[in-house]
Image (tube, rainbow, N blue to C red; front, side, top):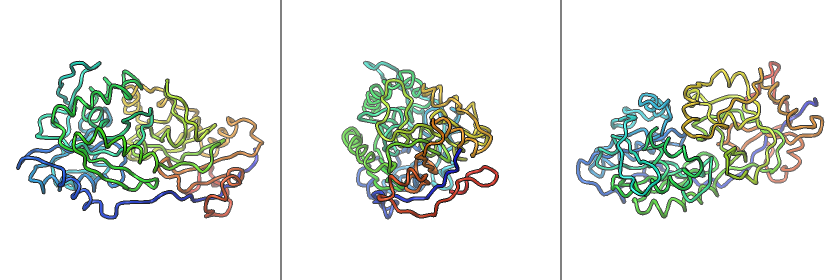
Length: 409
């Protein structure tokens, strides 16, 4: 097999970002939140790696206090954290969301309360602490979903249903597959809003650099109309590759803190969801992933989106947590272990073989993860296609050291 040289490049995306997150949250929340003095207000925090989530959560809690309320935080993440209260509390702590840092209690439970589901195709449940509170603030990032596309994808409606509904409602939704997410989830979300338990939504939109670009506070009525508009903005701000056709894509790390699917299918162009059409862009023949983030706690969701992985990654997998996530989601292909190579270099060589015609020049791209694609390494064939649209920031070099490990990004 020929030896490939790689050049590091940088591409530019729109980079509007909030200068003062705390002030923005305070202004937005206090302008919209109407609560009685002393009201106990639950604030949802999920399992995703949202930029500045600890700062945003604390600022939201502080704004509740400024409005005369008594805030507390609840983990709202379906079955994540091994479907245990302690596991979900640990995920929050890994993001810096602790009682000490937030200045308010964190109340974690997997217990739920059933609410009226008359006319719906399934039962509807809500986190017990949220239901027993005087009101719930839905706090979440709004972005394209990794398994389907619709009016409501990842955002406040999803948080109200799958996040607040814990494992019980997550299972109810996911047993319907994509239909459950695309059709039933918005119906359940509307029913939850009708209970009057939701007093506000705080929607976050990030730019292509994983930075906080937009924060808006929305009343329950505004959630239904404004969330789709914020979703459209999020799609415009998403990072993407500078070329359409890629023979081999190396993704250094996957992780639940990077994407709900470990690596974002909207970025890699690969969904593996029955009934959902493949993405038109990009077209990637072979995907290699070599490691998993520490913040994932061994949950290897998305490993099945790759064709080749490494022993290093495989040895870090917590299969109980991974399978719990996979069985709940119903998208089993995302959780299947691909071919396991002993080293990064061997994974690369096997990936080249799988792309067919191993002696032809290959368009090869290496990224750190699907949250960070402003900088990447590209092979000579890929560079020839994009050099007029990117900044070249390194001389050509090998990606591997003498031990067959990827060099530092």
